[in-house]
Length: 211
Image 1 (cartoon, rainbow, N blue to C red):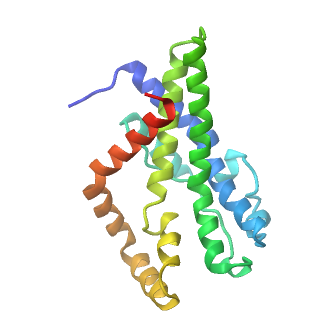
Image 2: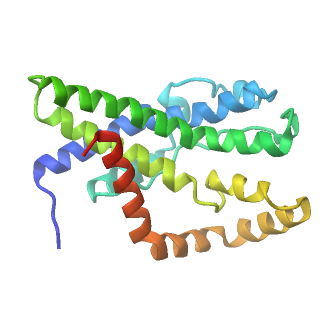
């Protein structure tokens, strides 16, 4: 059994804290702004057009994130961003745009953090050793959040993309079925695809940081 060193544990926890302060708020605010720009003001009425972490964080999801990060993975969630699909100018395509805005925002944060990481290494800046390690974990966690949320199972964002390519009747039937059994299906998919997901996440993270 593998046990991380104290330093690794600290780096992971700091990176998880950054996810709570940056990753989750950016993800949910992206959903909110995407809906707002398409004509739905529901998120604005609930005060969700902000990067303030206190507005977005869910206590249980935040605690689970910290615990899972200590174990070397990331499982957690923020408060779902409310929106009314009926208010979107293009309902079917609009729902997809709202859903994909969250993972896209996480990837954007990962890219920016990766640029900072590369700059630190290329300039050989005299910084505490914790800085590049925390950045590396933070980048990895952003990639995990983006890829995991693209799985096509409710309540994950990727489900909107799946439903978009079905007829309205099929979408209704699939949505109804997955609303009942989605969690079980999600757990099965995660278990079965764990090696594939780990490889994809590792590959994307390495591509971003350049090694």
